Length: 250
Image (cartoon, rainbow, N blue to C red; front, side, top):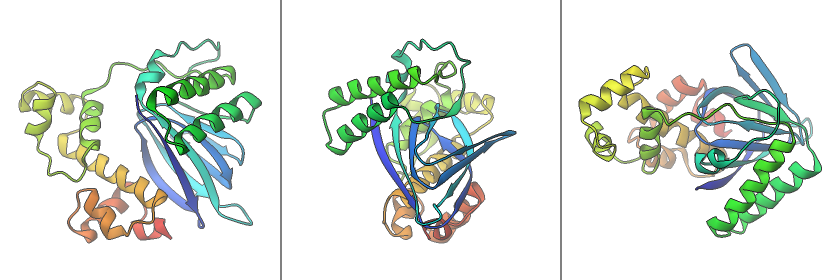
């Protein structure tokens, strides 16, 4: 089980295309508004409300600062293990992502989990707090779509995410997954992707998070995400998210 807290801050409007959500995400909007689109589905998450996203989603995201201040949000990211053990009781239709209004149970459960992460409590304690948060989501009417067995691409993504700056080769990952390189490539092709595509997705997703949640120089972010050339990093980032790293950092 892994759980993490990310805080997002923006003084200017941010637009990002096809942002990947690899973990189960519960985001609380503190100031401003978050807007999302996914095909024909659109939603706006106002201050005080919550965004809940199941793993594997790609959403177009826009962070809109408040009229008198910045955009602020706190995000709790939870790996699949605790999500898979939860027995959802609500009779609402399952969904891949949704917006929930504040409620006493949800507000308190989110704050309880957030405080535990800020205090770096042991994982066993944090697991109980995440369960409390999931129960509050259940009471709020949220039920996720069924989480199937991990696709090969997602298993590859999880391995690469541990060290995105490493000079990975398909042989390395095939060995971890106990399959031949040919089998790995065939399975990824069946999922309409490739080893190189997954590797770049992992690196750019990590860069996106670091740009938004840290003050590290962009050159350093490029390095820790496996890009030796800052200009190539900037080009690939704009192709993927529709904005330059420097524009997003501003």
